[in-house]
Image (cartoon, rainbow, N blue to C red; front, side, top):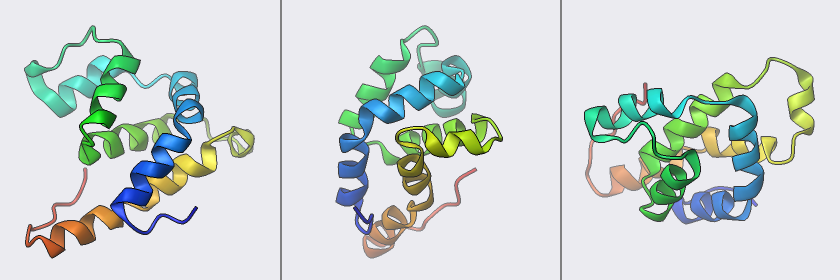
Length: 116
């Protein structure tokens, strides 16, 4: 599936959810630090990873979800073996196709900010 709309992005995420979660667990992104970066003191650092991700997905909070997958991508080992992980190509596509949300924001007349 080619990601060319926000709906395609969310559909791709949903269809590959199990593989993506496995990758996230494999690379071990520290959720407490992620909460601190995205929610300040409002986040619960003890909230289980799956609960946080499910809640974020349900709200379709693209900025937070995209930032999380960027962190997973950055934490992955620098090895060609990751290319054989189920869902790795999808994770890369979700990270790189962020532009579909930027186009949506521009159409709504919202200034687009650059992700950290």
